[in-house]
Length: 122
Image 1 (tube, rainbow, N blue to C red):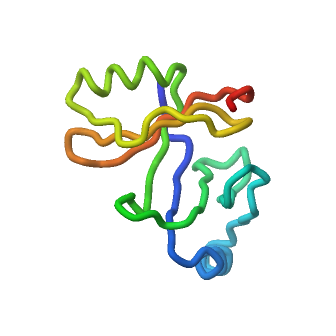
Image 2 (cartoon, helix red, strand yellow):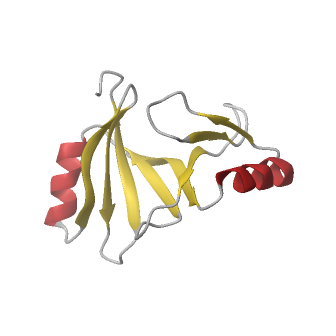
């Protein structure tokens, strides 16, 4: 069953935000070695309950907090979203070395990501 596996914080001041979450919660935040400016957030150990996340620059007309659901087939889920009155707001695209990602709006307007793991995505 698909589950929420990641959260994203989209912010104006990345350094200020990193400082806040590291000092308040002790989270470990480090720069991703991918092709875009993005930081990985580790909220705890692998054997602890919870999920990790990411931190990126705020974008106009995009939510400040977005959850991402792990799916087996992004294309199949996109069709189900459309068939059930959802809207694709960012089409399927590659996150190099990670997988395929798309963003949708549900029937209440909540934006969520769907990610299909694929280390060969380019």
